[in-house]
Image (cartoon, rainbow, N blue to C red; front, side, top):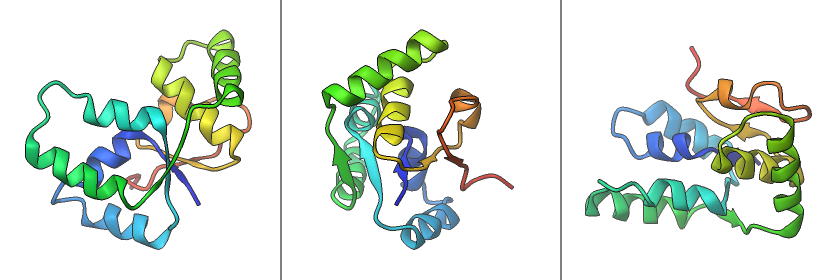
Length: 123
C-alpha cells in the first residue's frame, strides 16, 4: 500500500517503463498526495495526450486530501530541514498515513526519520 511520489507517476506513463508499471500493478492499492496531482498536471508544457494518460492513471489510485494533520507534519518537516513544499507535503502524507514512499528521488527524502523509501527503478 505505497504512496507514490510525482516522479514515479510521471515515469509510469512512459512507454519504456513497463517494469515500473509491472511493479505498480503488483503493489496495489496505490495512493498519492493531493499535491502530486498539482505537480504532475501543472507542468507548463504538458500535452493533451499526457493529460489523458495521467487522468487514466489517477483514476486507479486513491488521493489523500490535504488535512490539518498533514499540514502540521509538513511544517514540522520544513522546520527540521530544507525541503521543497511539494516534497514536504508528500513526505508528511506518507508519514501521517504510515505508508512507504515510492520515489526515484530518494536523496530528496533521505534522513527523514520514520519515512520508509522504496525506489522501484533502482538497479
